[in-house]
Image (tube, rainbow, N blue to C red; front, side, top):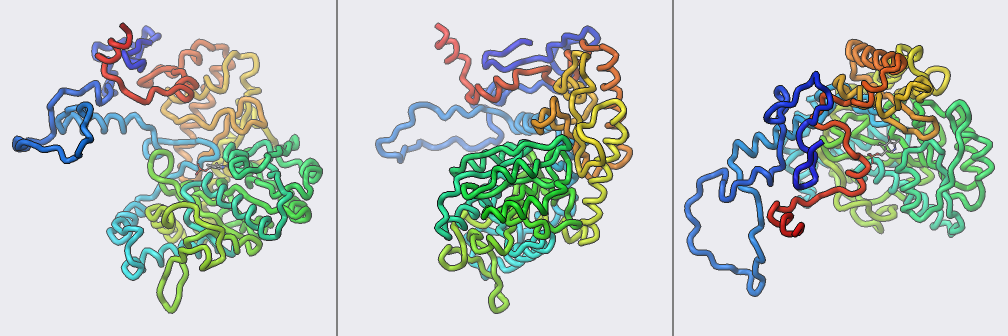
Length: 519
Ligand SMILES: *Cc1c(COP(=O)(O)O)cnc(C)c1O
């Protein structure tokens, strides 16, 4: 693969003689796109403006050291640049996105229409409350839906995403222990299969993380959990359904054990899509749980927009709800802003949260209705089980029995083939599918976690299954080279992903400066 002077790989660098290199580096209608700085033509501009009259600097003694260095481009160049970049971004709007634990589902366009109503899209968080009564009522209604769906007593809409919601929940747990003067609780228990944000949150809040092993059937080992519970444990963070796509059957016993030891039960609600409308988390003994509006309630996700991670609180923790929250007084809606004014531990972020996501989520809930949301969970689980049933003879499901909203395979079916989970994922890209979640959860070897969601049709699931079955069979036939060469049809082939994550080159340097540095 050739590199340009920024260390950026250029050209498709085909290792495959059947796919010729082109003169331009373009392939069909897939255009090679240089950085915007590499397209710079000094002085070029998108508009014709009159000559600027003699200008006087008004920065006092502060003098610019050099020109700002913005690239000069004409308007069509800019439009093409960003349009081409956007086309390199795979999205749920372009195709199936079976990324396990991510709930990449279709965002109905009705949501977008509602979010664009000027009364919602143009409000400012510092506007007088009397001018945003509708927006506040919308937040209040959304809060009501979230409380009803979860059976919980209180909700904060402020957290900006799931991980931020986790932090909010753990801070509430810490506040509750502190309020009782119970300062000896230094540990949070987290199952092995947990999403990385769970232990990270606990550690960021100053807790020591203790891992709970899984049973051979992929669930929390209740006896191991009980053995770790004690007066030093602040709480448990558990995902249900868990990240193996399995419902924690002993969840009532788990809740009872945690409460019996004086701890609180945090539930990571990222997988709520599997149970929304069918199971109320409050009935499972959960004290606090975040909800990812950008997963379960379809608001844009993964480069498509900001997340939103409301947190619901049971009676046990409701006094520790952070500000601000909406209340209705004498027919008017108001934001409670001061911690002293209401029962709150503080504030998670400036202002009240992601208004656009609230509108989309409520539009989604209201257009589905209670029965529609029940159907969402049912169809999400049905689709995952369909995918599992159609793949289980050629791939190796990690656990017996039906799954919830996602199905987990490990790499036993690749044993002895020389092909890895990563190779399967790369070959799937050539087939036009975003890969499934790979190597997570860590409790099985070489994990492939598939979450189709309820918004995929049987036809699209069949196409995906057909591709995956063919790849599994190809791997078993011994065609290792095919896999090691994949992906062949992408703008770039295999990149040093670890290097890109660990040592990213974030700054463009003009070639002249680079040449100087080299001298
Ligand atoms: C997505 C996810 C999170 C984190 O949510 P973000 O909104 O990405 O911060 C936490 N836990 C699980 C199980 C998830 O799938």
